[in-house]
Length: 267
Image 1 (cartoon, rainbow, N blue to C red):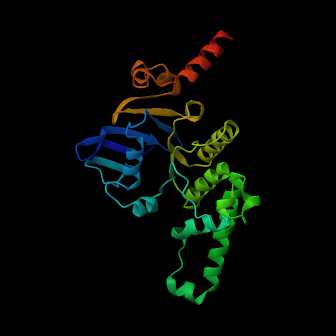
Image 2 (tube, rainbow, N blue to C red):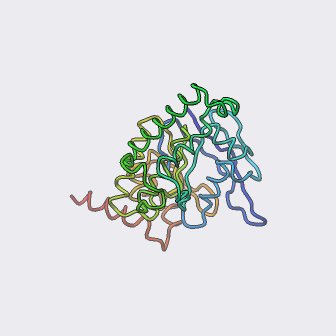
Image 3 (cartoon, rainbow, N blue to C red):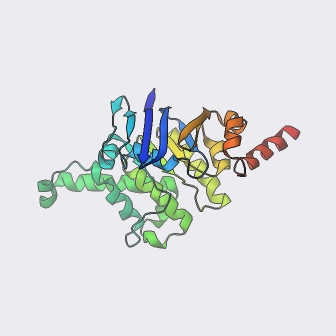
C-alpha cells in the first residue's frame, strides 16, 4: 500500500529550481533512501514533504490525502515527523523530559482538565512518561534518562533526536543525514536501529551521504541530481547505474561500495 506519493513536485528559489518535476512513491514499511551529490535538492525535497516549504507546483499525498502546502505542525499531526542534519536539542533539560515535551501533540486532556489536575490527566501523563521510557529503552538511552541532553556524547545526542521524533508516534519518519558525525561503530548501531524501527511498523525515508549505510539498509534508493530524479531502484541497480556514476563523477562516494562488491566477487 502506498504511504507517500509526490506528483510532479517542483520548488523554486527565485530563478533557481531546487526540485524539478519529481515524482515517486513510498510503500508502507519500506526503508527508502534519497541520495545525490551536494546541492542535488535532497533537503529541499524533505522540507517540502514536511511542510517547511510550500512547493511551486505539484502535489504531496499521504495515505491518499492531499497534504500539499500544509504547515509543518499539520503534517506532523498527519503522522509525518522529521529529524534534521544539525542536532537541535534543548541542552538544559533531561533526556526523558525531551521526549515528554515532544509528546505534547498526543495529549487528549483539555486545558481545563490540566488546570484541575484531574485523575484522567494524571493517568495520561503517567502513560506518556512510560511510553517515553520505552522509546529510550529502544534507543539504549533508558539508563541516561535523568542526564541533561546537552551532556550526552554526540552520537547519543543524534539518537536522542531520533527518540524525540519517535515520541510523536510517526507513521512516516524522515531522517535527514542521521549518520552525520557518527563513527563506524555508531553507524552500524544506527543501521540496526533503523531496521528495528521498520520492523516495528514505521516507514523510513532518509537522506544520507554514508553509502555503506544506504546500501546496507535500503529497500529502494532514489537519486537526485540538479533537482531531477535521475534513477530509482534496488541498491545493486543504483550502484551499477551509469547515470548515477556520472552524477557522482569526481566524487568517491560510490567507489567504496563498488570496491567491496568486487572483493565479494573475487572471493
